[in-house]
Length: 169
Image (tube, rainbow, N blue to C red):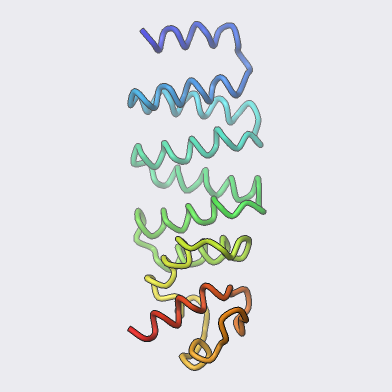
């Protein structure tokens, strides 16, 4: 019955991407994933730059187990807003957790850190994944780099501190 009410509402507000996005979110709450996907897709088609619908679409594809589709939407988000670090980070986690491709995950995470180097969760994921495979550094470079200064390109001090801690375990 709730779905019928939403459809009636949409008939009067056709073309409003925000309403389609909100209806999709409500449908997702009731685990009506396929219906929610349809409304998110409609909202995204109404305005390619409408990031909220694209974010929700990527998330629901992931929940529904459609990982390739989720990756595609996140990749579209990297093109639509190349200065937004979040889709790059999400792609890293998707590639690590769902595709088992740690090398590709590192590439996405490194791009995310290039945009915003203060992402602790990604720094920790890179350290767990063996960050030195991403950036060619030797042990002395890590040990001798003073905290607060980076001898590595695009490498924040927090990252160096984490690497230094990893190397002493």
